[in-house]
Length: 254
Image 1 (tube, helix red, strand yellow):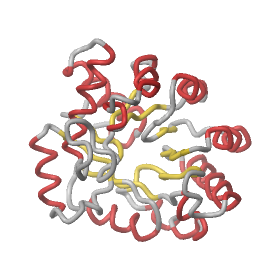
Image 2 (cartoon, helix red, strand yellow):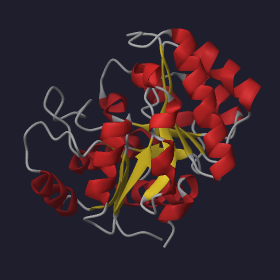
Image 3 (spheres, helix red, strand yellow):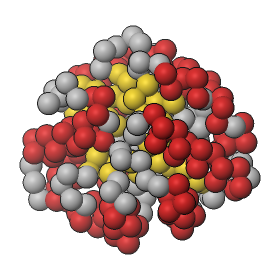
C-alpha cells in the first residue's frame, strides 16, 4: 500500500502565491505521501502535468470543469495519453454559477464519461446544485468502473444514490464545518471501502484553518475529522482512505 495520507483532489498550480515547492514540502511534513493534481481546462491540465512531472508521488488528471464546458472537450483530449495522467476530470455539472450554458455542460460531461469508458480511466465528478441532471446523464451514458464524486457536498440521500452507482465519495474540508450536519451524516453511512479524503485546495480549508487558503497538508484534518465522526482511530482512517485511493485510482497502486 502507499505510504502516508493521500490528497485525492488538489490544484497545486493555484497556491495563492505560496511557492509550490513550499506547499509540497508542507504536505510531506504533514504525512501526505501522494497527491492527485486535478486539471479543469486545457491550461490547468497542462500546468497539473508539469508539476506532476517534478515528483514521483504527484499525479495529474485531464478534465474540463463545467464552468469551462463552452470551450469543448477536444481541448483536453490530447493530454489523456500522458503517462502522468491517471483520470478524466474534473467533469460534471454546476448549476450554481452557470458559467457555461447548461446544455454545453451536459454535453461536455457526457463526452468525458465516454472518454473514461474508452480509455479505461477513472472519472472525477464535480456536481453542484445539479444532482438530478447528474444522475440522468449517468443513466444515459453509463457509469465508469472507477467514479469519484469529488468534494461530496450531499447528504444521506445523495450519498446513497452515488453509492448505488458504485461510486466513491470524496470528502473535503466541508465535512469539518459545524453547519454541515447532513454531509457529516453521509460520511458516517459511507461504506469503509468507498470513502476518500481530499482538500480541493486552495479552496474549502478545513477547521481549524477555515477561511484561509487551503493546501494538501490540511487533508490530515479531514481524515482526523472523518475518524472522529466514524468512531475510529486516525491511524485506521488513514489506512482506509489511502487504500481506497488505490482502488479509486488504480494507477496509484504500488
